[in-house]
Image 1 (tube, rainbow, N blue to C red):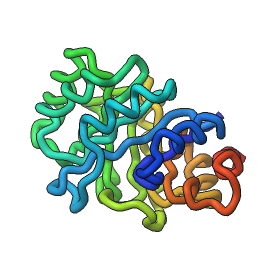
Image 2: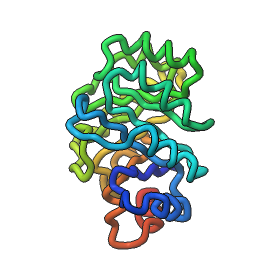
Image 3: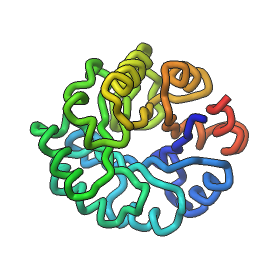
Image 4: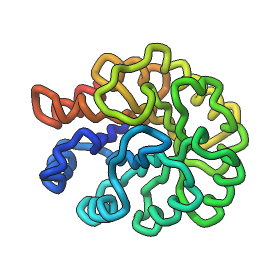
Length: 218
């Protein structure tokens, strides 16, 4: 069954602990945390202290999605507050020496994901990186802000990631992030997605969080 990862970027920050509790009760499989530095993307969000607090207040795994430059410096610091089962996801576009970086971080014991923007349709470096990663994150919007519309055709990147996984004998899961709702969730599920990241659709749903999460699985 597909996993649902609510993106806390769309949550009510004034009561984040309560939001996490409601997501746990609603059947969320993991939490997605977008870390932005104001340089790689034109926005700023969670930092180390907030994520450390989130990790202390949930038993759900978290995916710490680094939309930042200088991941070689920051990833080990986020990993120091992460727990078994948590993943650090890095954009290849943010790192010039991406293959060597993934190898280096993997050797330090980090569980890693790689993220691709909508214009990286050929999934560069994946055939070299795959031994070091647990997840491929397909961005179906350009990163930086929530509540964006799904970019049509993103499902082709999902298919390619799944085809490469089979060809390479890889073990990574394929996640999709951006504009995910009941309709687009079905499209990417049919393309092979294992994890759906959804923010606005869950937190602004007219029903309950459980109804929103369940609808993404149907």
